Image: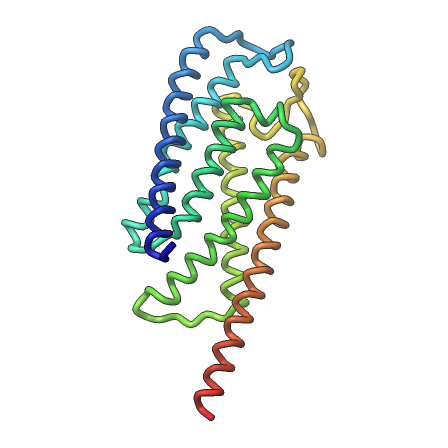
Length: 240
């Protein structure tokens, strides 16, 4: 298969996955609104039973998902940058896993460590996106910035960590305004956690984000360093 044919195939798959995830999120909003009118209030005493606040959170997450699923396309148009199709596919799959499977299908409670897996995955994805952004600055911007592998890696790491912090702020605000339990400050039985225990979920998420970003940044740094050394070697050979 030629390179152009392979790119065309990946592009078609990207569009298909985009449409599937978008349709599922829209249908989930409709489903959650209907169930919200029927769900009991307060705290559930039955396993996997959802109450009104759960459906409020489901609606919020799905609406956010519907908005941010268009983000790669908007970024490409606004800044004239090309995001790799494979990265967009990974991004759409992440939204599917985090919102549709996590919230709608309740995987956060059904599957052990589902939240931790997604936080680790998202930090790796965001770290990779940080490298893509710097690559754009290096090769697309007229100023032709020549950034060292260390600075590129530092930017990618800070970018991933910052996005993780912004997500935790979003969770806190959603819990405060809508009465949800995204930061797991309340147990399944309705007991409010205090002190060190109340910070557990937030700090766990931030720590996972830190190590996930660190792993992808180290790998990215090694790759860029080898690439830089290879270019220097070729330049020396040419000058000899």
